[in-house]
Image (cartoon, rainbow, N blue to C red):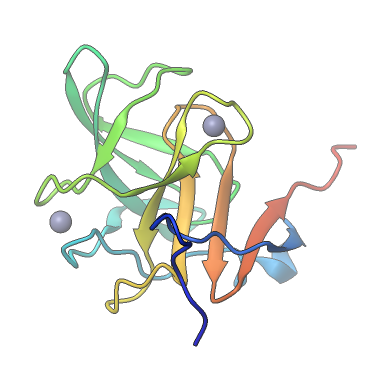
Length: 162
Ligand SMILES: [Zn+2]
Ligand SMILES: [Zn+2]
């Protein structure tokens, strides 16, 4: 088993990156089937679906302290989302947390795409292990998303639009 923490105690982020093209044949690989908050509550949302697949439900707290809840596509790289309550403002950095217990999602690192948001983490199994997790930016509209599967980061890349 590899060390998951660096000497400074920070989470170690895998350096091996696999880019998976976002095409139907790959949808299994880049879709999340289960997702859990740090306390083990399921975040899957069967009431709000995206292309027939359940969304992932999250609560958010805006910089002005207003709260809301939304559901986002369970396919990584797909930014489709549905507002359940509150107001989503594109470009705004928010605190993301569990809609059930309000536990904040842990921050993995600063976002390397928008440089403003933080990459937060949700777990993909009940073991609540970083090595089976999904991470995404907490700035609305930033497309930075990845899956962490043991020592590999999986990113979805969009096929060039025709
Ligand atoms: Zn929870
Ligand atoms: Zn970002």
